[in-house]
Image (tube, rainbow, N blue to C red; front, side, top):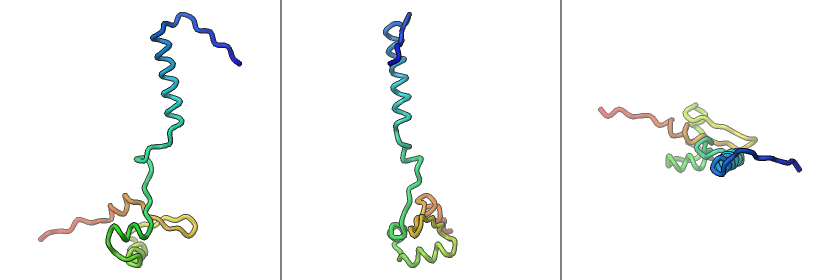
Length: 92
């Protein structure tokens, strides 16, 4: 085991050093926040959002209206992209 010698450090300085070390370790141990992660939606979830059939969502993906992403046979859509696909309609 290593030996640590502390000289000329008052209680407040020692307390601050310990707090800083603990904060750094906690930051390293925490998973990324959910705001850093993109929420993925299934065909069914996208269909539920738009109240459309799965076939309609598939057609929109085929036309490039929605961008699908996949892992093996599983297909997902990024929530932010699904919502961004909505277009403002003119009200004449």
